[in-house]
Length: 156
Image (tube, rainbow, N blue to C red; front, top):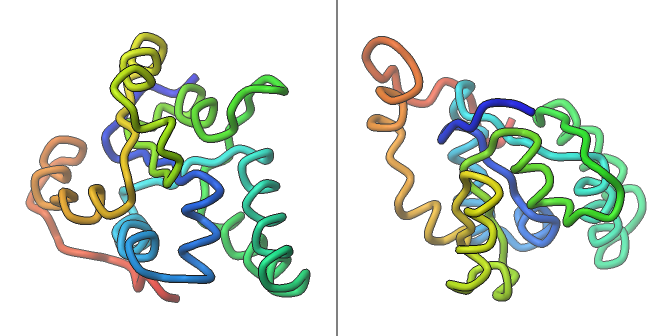
Protein backbone atom coordinates (compact mmCIF):
# COMPACT_ATOMS: atom_id res chain seq x y z
CA UNK A 1 0.00 0.00 0.00
CA UNK A 2 1.10 3.54 -0.76
CA UNK A 3 1.03 6.21 1.94
CA UNK A 4 -2.04 8.45 1.69
CA UNK A 5 -1.55 11.77 -0.08
CA UNK A 6 -3.95 14.59 -0.95
CA UNK A 7 -2.23 14.71 -4.35
CA UNK A 8 -3.47 11.21 -5.25
CA UNK A 9 -6.93 10.97 -6.83
CA UNK A 10 -9.18 8.11 -7.94
CA UNK A 11 -11.93 8.72 -10.49
CA UNK A 12 -14.65 6.07 -10.51
CA UNK A 13 -15.58 4.46 -13.84
CA UNK A 14 -18.59 6.77 -14.25
CA UNK A 15 -16.39 9.85 -13.90
CA UNK A 16 -13.73 8.51 -16.26
CA UNK A 17 -16.35 7.78 -18.93
CA UNK A 18 -18.10 11.13 -18.42
CA UNK A 19 -14.77 12.95 -18.74
CA UNK A 20 -14.35 11.47 -22.22
CA UNK A 21 -17.93 11.40 -23.46
CA UNK A 22 -19.72 14.30 -21.76
CA UNK A 23 -17.24 16.79 -20.34
CA UNK A 24 -18.71 19.07 -17.70
CA UNK A 25 -17.78 18.56 -14.07
CA UNK A 26 -15.96 15.27 -14.73
CA UNK A 27 -13.67 16.92 -17.27
CA UNK A 28 -13.17 19.99 -15.06
CA UNK A 29 -12.11 17.77 -12.15
CA UNK A 30 -9.78 15.55 -14.17
CA UNK A 31 -8.27 18.54 -15.97
CA UNK A 32 -6.86 19.56 -12.57
CA UNK A 33 -5.20 16.15 -12.30
CA UNK A 34 -3.88 16.20 -15.87
CA UNK A 35 -2.60 19.81 -15.60
CA UNK A 36 -0.28 19.09 -12.65
CA UNK A 37 2.48 16.48 -12.88
CA UNK A 38 2.62 16.23 -9.10
CA UNK A 39 -1.07 15.19 -8.87
CA UNK A 40 -1.57 11.49 -9.58
CA UNK A 41 -4.52 9.59 -11.00
CA UNK A 42 -4.65 6.20 -9.27
CA UNK A 43 -6.53 3.34 -10.95
CA UNK A 44 -6.59 -0.43 -10.88
CA UNK A 45 -7.08 -2.67 -13.90
CA UNK A 46 -10.66 -3.53 -12.83
CA UNK A 47 -11.48 0.18 -12.54
CA UNK A 48 -10.17 0.87 -16.04
CA UNK A 49 -11.92 -2.26 -17.34
CA UNK A 50 -15.24 -0.90 -16.01
CA UNK A 51 -14.71 2.52 -17.55
CA UNK A 52 -13.59 1.05 -20.87
CA UNK A 53 -16.75 -1.11 -20.99
CA UNK A 54 -18.94 1.96 -20.40
CA UNK A 55 -17.18 3.88 -23.18
CA UNK A 56 -17.50 0.90 -25.56
CA UNK A 57 -21.19 0.54 -24.77
CA UNK A 58 -22.03 4.24 -25.12
CA UNK A 59 -19.67 5.02 -28.01
CA UNK A 60 -17.65 2.28 -29.73
CA UNK A 61 -14.85 -0.19 -29.22
CA UNK A 62 -12.24 1.86 -31.10
CA UNK A 63 -12.79 4.95 -28.96
CA UNK A 64 -12.70 2.78 -25.83
CA UNK A 65 -9.39 1.20 -26.88
CA UNK A 66 -7.86 4.61 -27.72
CA UNK A 67 -9.04 5.99 -24.37
CA UNK A 68 -7.60 3.01 -22.52
CA UNK A 69 -4.20 3.47 -24.13
CA UNK A 70 -4.15 7.15 -23.18
CA UNK A 71 -5.29 6.66 -19.58
CA UNK A 72 -2.78 3.83 -19.06
CA UNK A 73 0.01 6.35 -19.68
CA UNK A 74 -1.45 8.81 -17.16
CA UNK A 75 -2.45 6.61 -14.23
CA UNK A 76 -0.48 5.08 -11.40
CA UNK A 77 -1.50 1.40 -11.43
CA UNK A 78 -2.54 -0.33 -8.24
CA UNK A 79 -3.57 -3.91 -7.45
CA UNK A 80 -6.36 -4.98 -5.14
CA UNK A 81 -8.24 -8.19 -4.30
CA UNK A 82 -10.88 -9.44 -6.72
CA UNK A 83 -14.40 -8.46 -5.75
CA UNK A 84 -13.47 -5.18 -4.07
CA UNK A 85 -15.16 -1.98 -5.27
CA UNK A 86 -12.62 -0.85 -7.90
CA UNK A 87 -12.59 2.85 -6.98
CA UNK A 88 -12.53 2.37 -3.21
CA UNK A 89 -9.94 -0.39 -3.41
CA UNK A 90 -7.80 1.77 -5.72
CA UNK A 91 -7.92 4.52 -3.11
CA UNK A 92 -7.08 2.16 -0.25
CA UNK A 93 -4.19 0.42 -1.98
CA UNK A 94 -3.01 3.48 -3.89
CA UNK A 95 -3.01 6.05 -1.10
CA UNK A 96 -5.55 8.32 -2.78
CA UNK A 97 -7.22 10.81 -0.47
CA UNK A 98 -9.88 11.74 -3.05
CA UNK A 99 -12.42 9.49 -4.78
CA UNK A 100 -14.53 11.18 -7.45
CA UNK A 101 -17.84 9.52 -8.28
CA UNK A 102 -21.39 10.22 -9.37
CA UNK A 103 -22.58 7.22 -7.31
CA UNK A 104 -24.83 8.75 -4.67
CA UNK A 105 -24.61 5.72 -2.36
CA UNK A 106 -20.87 6.29 -1.91
CA UNK A 107 -21.44 9.94 -1.03
CA UNK A 108 -23.81 9.41 1.91
CA UNK A 109 -22.77 10.21 5.47
CA UNK A 110 -23.02 6.54 6.47
CA UNK A 111 -20.85 5.44 3.56
CA UNK A 112 -18.35 8.20 4.33
CA UNK A 113 -18.01 7.08 7.94
CA UNK A 114 -17.57 3.44 6.90
CA UNK A 115 -15.02 4.32 4.23
CA UNK A 116 -12.98 6.60 6.50
CA UNK A 117 -12.87 3.76 9.01
CA UNK A 118 -10.74 1.82 6.51
CA UNK A 119 -9.02 4.42 4.34
CA UNK A 120 -8.11 8.08 4.69
CA UNK A 121 -10.12 9.34 1.73
CA UNK A 122 -12.96 11.65 0.87
CA UNK A 123 -15.65 10.65 -1.63
CA UNK A 124 -17.11 13.52 -3.57
CA UNK A 125 -18.85 14.63 -6.74
CA UNK A 126 -16.48 15.77 -9.49
CA UNK A 127 -18.04 19.27 -9.34
CA UNK A 128 -17.13 19.58 -5.67
CA UNK A 129 -13.56 18.51 -6.34
CA UNK A 130 -13.22 20.90 -9.30
CA UNK A 131 -14.61 23.77 -7.24
CA UNK A 132 -12.57 23.11 -4.09
CA UNK A 133 -9.27 22.09 -5.72
CA UNK A 134 -6.67 24.69 -4.74
CA UNK A 135 -3.42 23.69 -6.42
CA UNK A 136 -1.35 26.41 -4.75
CA UNK A 137 -2.22 25.31 -1.18
CA UNK A 138 -2.02 21.63 -2.07
CA UNK A 139 1.40 22.11 -3.67
CA UNK A 140 2.71 23.61 -0.43
CA UNK A 141 1.44 20.56 1.48
CA UNK A 142 3.02 17.93 -0.78
CA UNK A 143 5.99 19.57 -2.53
CA UNK A 144 8.82 21.92 -1.62
CA UNK A 145 9.09 25.40 -3.00
CA UNK A 146 6.72 27.87 -4.54
CA UNK A 147 3.76 26.70 -6.63
CA UNK A 148 4.88 26.87 -10.28
CA UNK A 149 1.39 26.75 -11.78
CA UNK A 150 0.07 24.06 -14.10
CA UNK A 151 2.92 22.26 -15.82
CA UNK A 152 1.07 20.09 -18.36
CA UNK A 153 -1.60 20.63 -20.98
CA UNK A 154 -4.64 18.80 -19.59
CA UNK A 155 -5.89 18.00 -23.10
CA UNK A 156 -2.60 16.79 -24.62
